[in-house]
Amino acid sequence: MNVEIKPLESSDKDWVLTIIRHWGADFVVTRGRKVYPAEIEGFYAVNETGERVGLVTFEIVNDQCEIVTLDAFVQWSGIGTQLIEQVRTTARKRGCKRLWLITTNDNIPAIRFYQRRDFELVAIHRNALDLSRALKPSIPLVGMHGIPIRDELEFEQKL
Image 1: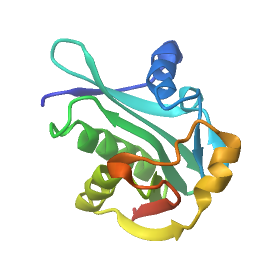
Image 2: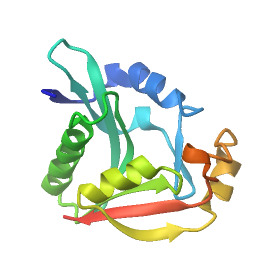
Image 3: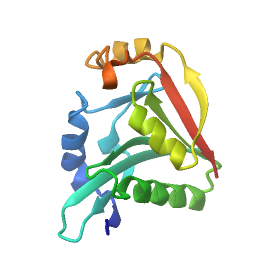
């Protein structure tokens, strides 16, 4: 799909909140901390008719860039890949040495997606969702494909 990637601006905050709230709150939990995607950097994808078709948010801390959220509203169209490429380019320009992210053990489509884009599984944080649920009780016990959600999987790319 032919899309244009644009940086998020402060005027996009309400739209980002609308997207993130479908996960049960205004924040996500990653590695035991709350992150508010509407308050951090990101990009969105726009198709030829002006419709927003994707969103990625990220945080750069020192020489590491964490992809916090990634949503492609049209699957199998290259939107997620293009958004990741934009984050990777930005991270490199800012001197990052590592691009990383967390997903849960039930998210088989994401595991497949990230591995096909040269991310390596570098850690399994066993039972990390116990802490995550303490911060965000709306996280379900069972996720995709009937798989119990227990662990955080950490993927990375060296830049």
